[in-house]
Length: 319
Ligand SMILES: C[S@@+](CC[C@H](N)C(=O)[O-])C[C@H]1O[C@@H](n2cnc3c(N)ncnc32)[C@H](O)[C@@H]1O
Image 1 (spheres, rainbow, N blue to C red):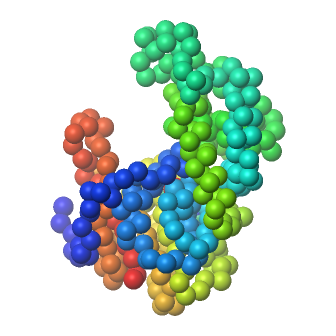
Image 2: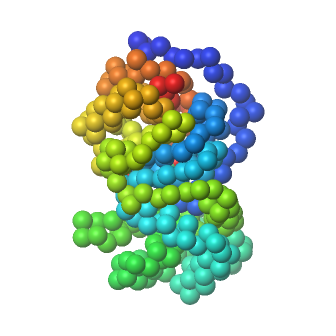
Image 3: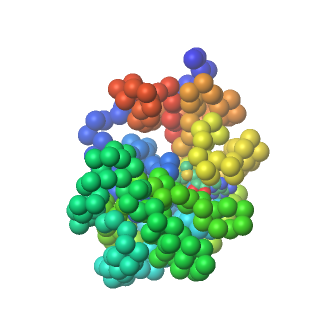
C-alpha cells in the first residue's frame, strides 16, 4: 500500500536498543514495554515533567527519565490499581506476602513455587488451558468476593493476575466479569512489583484522578521543558478499551495536539497507520505536518510466527 507520508528516517533502529525494558505489574493489553527502548531514543532529553496522558499499565512512564511524572487514564479502575500499588510501594514485600496469603486462601495455583502434581497432570491433557482448568472454581470465588466488596483492591489485583489475558473488564452493572485465564502468579509478577515500587520510591510521581485526555491536559500547568506522551487506543485495531474510542475522539485528539503545538509545547504520539486491511486516513492526512518515525513492532501473524503482519506502528512528534 502506498502512502504520501514522508518518514523522518534520520533515526536508525539500533539493534542494541532491543535491551529489555521494565514490565509493568499490570501486564496491560497493548502496553508499550517492548517498544520503549526505541521510543525513549526519540523522546526529548532532559524532560522536566513527563505527562503520560493515556497511561494504561504505566510502561511508558516506568521506562523514562524525567524530573517528575504525571499519569492519567480515563479508566478509574486502572487509576485505582496504580494508586494501590503506589501506596504499597513503601513496603512491597508486605504486599506480596499478603497476596501469597490470598493465593493460598483461595487455593489458586502459584507457579513461582513450581507446579504441583495435579497441575502437571492437567498439563498433559490440556496443553494450553491447564492453569485455567485448575483455577476456575477458585477464581470464580475470588471474583464473587471482589464484586461483593469492590473497595478491596488487593482482590482486584489478584483477579487481574489470574484473569483472561490479564485484562480488566466490568459489565454494565459494574460487576467484574472476565473469565479465568491460563495465567497465574509466577516470578515475573513478583519481579514487576518490586521494579515498579523501586521506580515509584525513587521518582516524583503524581496520579491524576482519572480524566478524559482533553480535560486532563487543559487542567495542567504545562511549562517549558515538559513533555507529553500520548498513547491512545488505536482507531483501526481492537481491544476492550477501543469501545471508548471512535473518529470523534481521534479528531478531538488531533485538534488538541495542534493547539499544543501552537503554544510551543512538545509532545509525542504513538499510533498505527495500517493494520491488516485497514488504514487510518485521518492520521495519514493529519500527520503530514509533523515528524513521523517508523517504529519496529513485532506484531507476529497469528498463522505464521515467522512472518510479520502488515501493521505499521508510527511515532509522531512536533519537535
Ligand atoms: C493503548 S492503551 C495505553 C497503554 C499504555 N501506554 C501502556 O504502556 O500500558 C490506551 C489507554 O487509553 C485509555 N483511554 C481511552 N479513552 C481515553 C480518554 N478519552 N482519555 C484518557 N484515556 C483514555 C484506555 O483506558 C487505555 O488504558
